[in-house]
Image: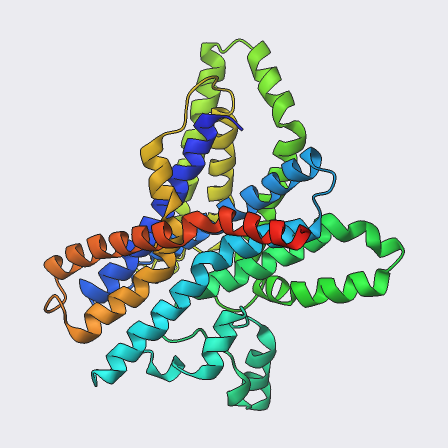
Length: 378
């Protein structure tokens, strides 16, 4: 993977985080009740990037280090996710409790409970057992929800179980011949959330997008260098440029047509919400991503863009904390009534808070992970 490709991935990651931020800021602090849905597009891009990067980096690490197996993969993912996730969860606890203590009502009081706190802490808010117990058996107390105003955390739980399911498959598949029962039992435990999400649940189908993107990562890992070498041997004439331009234009036209179809035609010929989770749209977006990534792989030289890298670096922390901040601002009316001023100030405040959580916690995850591994090997 060359620096230009890394810049492309960083740029997509940074844009995805800002799309989620702007979508929530608009619907909460500019035009309450509106659902612009651009945040859904950001979440979709996150899953697309995650599927590709987790698979590709895991394959690279396994090739570079014969001792890299499920244990080290788990440690990598655990510290990457939880180093900032836990402080962000306690931030939600403090902010939501402060709203209640100040005797202000907010929309997420019903989710502010010990049960939901521990469900979110242990990534169980997307586990379907409680949902089935509630819907089929009427056992409402068994349903596990995301804690308080930590609404974006549901995607982190989905990805956590995707990581474990994928990692177990990649690093433990050889065990199926000698310990098949044990392998399948653990695989099913890890796979309940990803498999359920392929057809139901919040953001239904996102786990399928994740696995399709990881499939592209496998393809690129195996054949990427061959494709780049082939491209270097082929002279780029006007006909090839024209064909590439036509293909790119066709993909963009199909994406626009799909948005028009699902948001206008299927809405009774009046503009409705754009469904970015529409599977056809997701596949077309993936094809556009794959095409751009492969094309950028043919560009020699270049270096990492520090500005883009910085915005991408704090995107995870920003994703975790911005919604709770917006809920706090809205509940207490800190910047007056919802409108342009409240919207702009909140967007800036959300980014600053994300940068702080990245600086204070997220950027240290490798150092914390290495310290833990050194302690374990003493």
